[in-house]
Image (cartoon, rainbow, N blue to C red; front, side):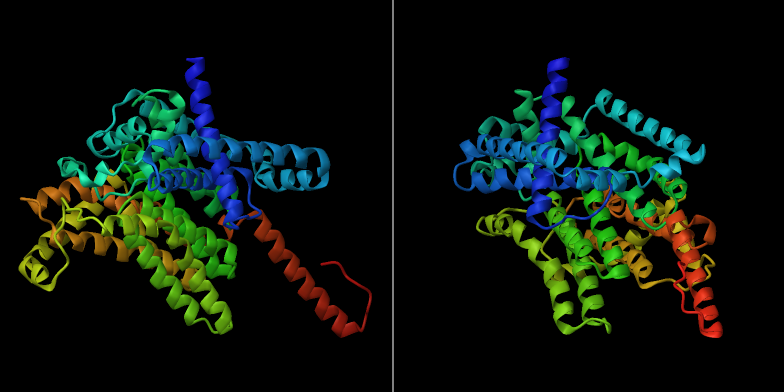
Length: 495
């Protein structure tokens, strides 16, 4: 048991170190708390490791995993060496990072409520981890992602037979490879294929999703409000069900949330760091699941419209913003070129043509009814009802552009994904919808929850203490400015 714990710890440490190095190389270096950086590094690390295995496999599939192990080992040495160097020679910077990481501690120590909420959230995560280790993988986790992970682990990488052998067509040959290659990485460190312990990887995706959600809410609002919102999200039955199934839907949900949060804060503050982070996570979404392409295109349209129509930015800044979002997508181009050079059949959907659309247009009313039934199902609690009602929520201010973006990107994605079943080639498209729709809606459920959180937090009571102090300081400064102008007193006044 101790050996397995060490092997799993080594695999996760390698993922985090690769994510940290990837963040540095891609200039995604933000002054954010350590736990947010860790969650982001986990997502970036799985993407970096899986992409590296695929890139090396294009040259020699037998050496792909071993080469990746060597690169990850170097990245781990770099991270450990860099941390040691900073601890010894840069105590001031190290202390500043510590103070920044403790941003949430005053909220936890000044009241009994935040520690209690943190305890509840921790118990939810622990329960999720235990449930994941005690349940079996779902069908897709076994027959699609899992079977590929086993093959890649045994073959040392992505062999050409993965695409060329049409006898494997039932496993969806054209599906992206982030999840199976990440599983193969864990198998490499374990030394064997173990479908029970590999689910630690999916617990990591679920925890990363919750951490990113909490940090996004707490970035502008109070700690108790952020913890409460995260607890409610973690109670969503569909999220709980798929967190331990071995499916790629929770990883894509985490990447989609990170993308939309980055775009949202870019809209709020025009910081390219936020947009750069969103762009990289969105590109990895395309590498995680095919629906990630839809999310990437929807966000590309949003970023392009908002950047090119901005009046307070120069044209150079507008074009730079669009290119910042576009360029990380080049990381996934080799995969799409790899598929285009081979005639990979699609198991689920026909080609998008006008003839196919007109032939199956009669499906739209049925699809709308099934979508409505899904959104009002008890599998989601009150999430989607609150999503619609939050638009009508009375607020002292009109809904901002950032909140409008969150609302629109969720709605557009759901309608596009639902409409795609018009082109379903299953013998029963209704069965196709019934088995897939809840997983597809899950991709944007955390974004909808984030929209609800920021929408309902418009009142004064939900604002963070940091914002309250800033607003009080601004008010004090304005009062003293008027006094100075009225009396002619020139002495500096600290507001």
